[in-house]
Amino acid sequence: MYEYLKNLFYGKGDYKKEQVLGIGSFGNVWLVTDKKTGQKFALKQSNNDLGAILYQYDLLGQVNKRLPGSLKRIKLTEQNQFIMEYLEGYETLNSFINTCKNMDTLQEIFYRILDQIDELHRYGISHRDLKANNIMIHPETLDIKIIDFGLGCLDKPSQQKFSCQNYYGTTQEFYPDYESLKSFQDWSKADKKAFLSSMKFYKKFDKNIDKELKKIGRKK
Image (cartoon, rainbow, N blue to C red):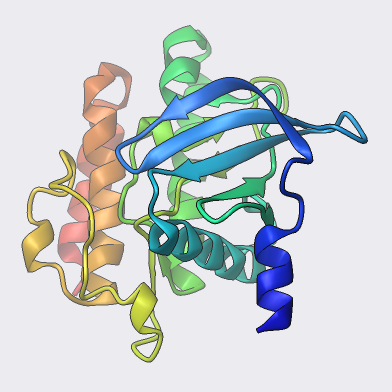
């Protein structure tokens, strides 16, 4: 308990907010600077919901353990916020697709994202909110980071706070059948369908999407 409380409040006041990076239904993400070192981080701040921020922090820790290349959590600060890695130089997949003119590069990114989604599932993690704005790309290195695991779940039935039987968000545009999804296997298929559905807005991927959706339909 002592370690938990120490970690919960350690760092209070040590970071300066610079600008808002993103605004979501459950909270905002800020660019912050460590006042002592000048190092940049991202700060996730929940809308006065301690349970939601602890859920996201704990789950991101599980993602870090299972997937070494994933977005790194750093530490809890105040009761409704935590510090994580700042993805300097990265842009959303949506922005990358709209600016990249090289079709071979876009095709490569498309399949590498599908591979990363499969890897998450192999490690027992379902994201449950996959869309173009929750995937970050570095335009020079082409490194891919999936972000915002606030609605994610694990394949361990005993870990109830990460249970795939519960869904705490609003109806998701790309998860139209979310009410019927109860198991980890259900959500794993839905993750990939959601990503593919979000890609339909970009006509460049039509043939790829149809091919991958057929693959999902054949899996039991």
